[in-house]
Length: 453
Image (cartoon, rainbow, N blue to C red; front, side, top):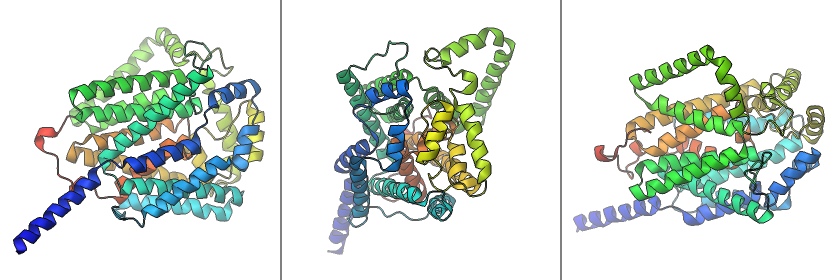
């Protein structure tokens, strides 16, 4: 009798594990819709063209002052889902797991403490509410999915947003990829759309590793489409970050001899650049202009206006060098208008992750965030080498992309889809048990260990 009961318990446990492994379609659909309502605009392509002609910061300032009712309701709904998820069965409770989790808790707490010294406490509080909403939503998804789900979650979300963007521009009549001054927007700013395409590219690339041949071809095609539309956004930061992150993480995941080969190849490329720079550099410059040299007066020497902006922002850092201006308090309406008028283009953030962190939360917050990213990448490398699972390579490439893209943008701080996916990834790495520590996930066999891409 006891043996029969034991068999029944084992069968129940197996059924529960199988249930947990299923992709949470309802939760995905809710998050997909709410994140779209929070960060997307159906007529953004038209608004972007108007913005280029008028360089009017009024829409940016209006968003900073209050935001739209639609976004506020969607944000509250996302937070409500996160809170409700804490009390429903089927979740895998998160807990502190080592240094990475401690760093994340410290960084989040430091951001909330910054209200005490914020230059604009009300603005910081409002933005911190949005941060809490994003964290709760990411926590709900992370606790109800397994690591392998993250790639599929990202693929469907980024792919869906790209498809909506293409359809929207086709309806509006703004889809003109062959025009010299065209930048693909869809429902987002071109630089943000490039990030969305990067997410689609990474997820399709790493999902293809374990896919069957037919699906592998489909995923390769999806990755190619993502790269094509990333090119149409003409975002240099997105293209450079995607290419460099893919190669960099691949190099880190290789054996010692593989790393030496990549280092040797890089040094050879640099040497050739020095030897034949007079011929190569003009061609390289024409290539990286991406057709934008006629649409802007800024040259590559100023990184499309970023260098003067950074110089101006560094002067502001000196005014509050220890603690910063408080969470998102630097980019208030007054300074947004002031910097927009002085720089000659609409500015809503510093276009540099590390500079924006210095402005917001000072050197303490900056160091903590950089340590989080590097510690998370080290953890993905360890888990990837131990399990050979593609999802950890995906996480590592994604976080490497954040570090590199942060040199020219700070979109990971802007509460975008990238922000949500990075939160999801960090929670999974720092607060959830990896497969090697969980009895409900079978260890990969030698037969299904694919080589690192």
